[in-house]
Image (cartoon, rainbow, N blue to C red; front, side, top):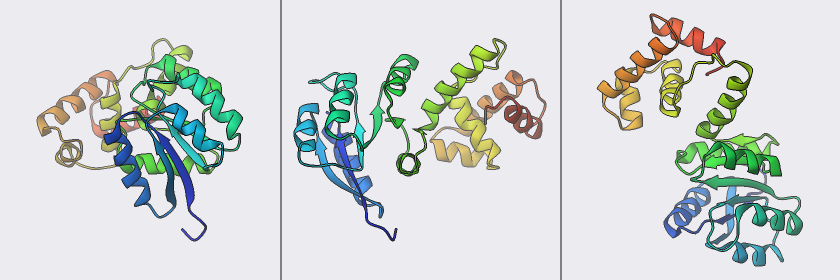
Length: 212
């Protein structure tokens, strides 16, 4: 990127996760990690003299509750973009954080390049949700407007998106580290759930239902 790098601070109480994120973001041209912390209090101390562009915030910290920490960050660094980075992807946790005004919510199981995409989306002013989280948020809206909505699992939606991208079952299996047999089973279940006969109809119906 031609313009200056965006600074990121990360707080996560798992050193392995923290190290992995630091390596990932430092290797990306557009970003530089200005601080990484295992406790919320360490982040707050850092923010007294530093204003990073983005904070990746684990809400399951041992020392400070995620919601309280969010409020404290907002007071110290009101202009900073805050993205939740968490294992908690229950609807209640997501809704609470989005209600607080967080700029995005990323599941810890999100692939590295998708994490990067979420960061860029947040910098563009968009709400940055990882696919798993977006599905949970979307399915809530869909179910409330239509009780007969087709319910598909997070894994099924992941496979549905890959089918729609035009790749084969073998390629999907390789990408997701699953067997071809498992992928074909999911494919069969999707055809049944959406009451369609083939992949073309599947994609058409999934698009109509806003599943992809």
